[in-house]
Length: 344
Image (cartoon, rainbow, N blue to C red; front, side):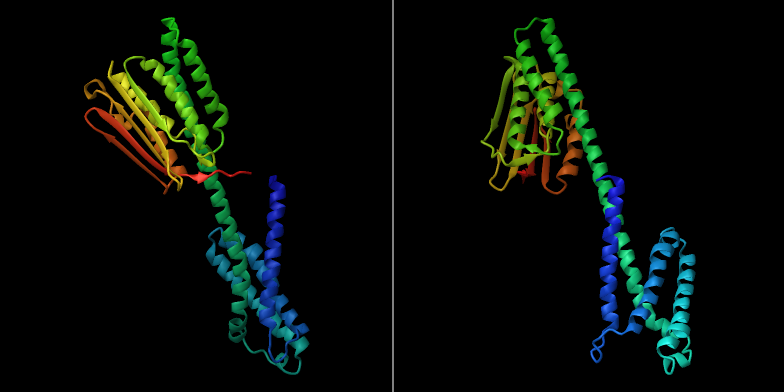
């Protein structure tokens, strides 16, 4: 829906909203158990109030109240209500009640107290509608900002991953390693998934785990005989979904930490489980030598900061991340409550 069509649609909804509520107020205003029928003078009196409310709603509110010119709004509103009282006392009552109420002007105070609740109700409808619309705009803006931030965070992952693996691929190509074709194949598979399958906010959990396993195999080729890599995942139901590229950061860091600090005896364990209630438990442990590792592993690179931000945005109250660093190991435990994928 384009902007113009949306504006027309919102205006139509507001007109319908105002008409229905005005009719309800009119019914309540004119109801009299002794005289259940609606008289003409009741409609005219109410029309006087409705016209004044219309001026307040669509002229005084946007021009003065919403621009914080409260004194102007108050003064003009009081003058407008004074005009309503004058029209009611000097014109309408003299037309419909010339021999009773129309003979004398009863003053300002009593009519003001009489019409004030009705005016407050009629103008309150518009104020409530504007507040709802404003909240909707805030929610849409918040969603747009959140989507933009998530796209930015995901865009950081691809270059980071590509840069690291192209360096490794270059080294193997220089050495004319027979493993180069296998690395290229695994790399192309993972990159294809990142570039084309991860555009949505969520992906199927089974597909994500499949790519994590491919990514692990890709990095395992670089370790060769220098250590042991274990990747375990149970049979995952196909109907659960997860935010893409959340878990891959921990696996990438595990390989990078271990290889940078150790020349042999590398140990990397990865385990993924899913409970019947949809609770995903991810565990990743890697060995490293503290003396050979110059950086603080708990804040290594953009990866961990990136994934923390994404978890806060996507799973604000449904995840638990625990990172522990001991003398020779670095462990990550992540628990996320997943949801069922929409099968549209």
